[in-house]
View 1 (cartoon, rainbow, N blue to C red):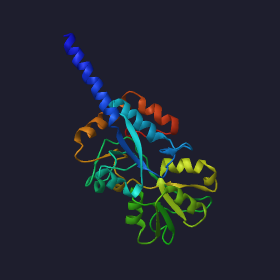
View 2 (cartoon, helix red, strand yellow; view 1 turned 45 degrees about the vertical axis):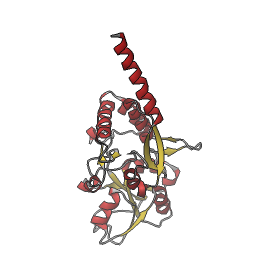
View 3 (cartoon, rainbow, N blue to C red; view 1 turned 90 degrees about the horizontal axis):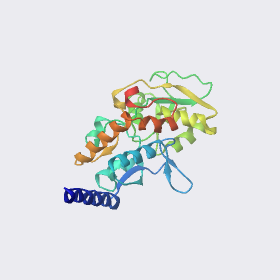
View 4 (cartoon, helix red, strand yellow; view 1 turned 180 degrees about the vertical axis):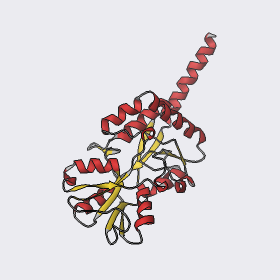
Length: 256
């Protein structure tokens, strides 16, 4: 029995050593997206998703490293094995599920229109006809605008949310569509002082069931581990403890 316990202990040590030597490369966009991903002045990353994924890695007993990737190249980076997991506010959609797998959703929020204070905005396609709408490219928000507003509105696509924010402040677009939590954070800052929420976009299948971790289709065991860890963090209160640091509303998929 003592020999058996010794073998188990030795195996555990070897497993931990292997996990440390081969960390999971967690892909996030190089462009910060506060409060989900925040790049500190020392180059370190923080924010809701960074803290959450590190907690998930602890639950998996797996070391993880943040890897910066351009947003529009993040899925190719996953499938070419430059990163192992996408953990960067990626909506689960049928189109994306054709090329990658997703974990269970780990958060859900609506999309929100933002524009100048005091300017009336009727958010229907007819109401925004002729308006210039801004959106970050390669997102479900971009797909939504293209499908429903592309015929009557001018849609401008941006590589980063910061570029879009700057153009809205400068008056180069009339309205922008973005994640509601990102909108709330932006409006609370000095750059958002002259702007306001114009309302939420209606729920639509294009937005999918929520945000999930993106994985290669072949990594079935890793997906299972992430699913289990996400459920555990939601069940034991760890998810709530982390989200309350960043948000005043419940963004758990269970709350939608």
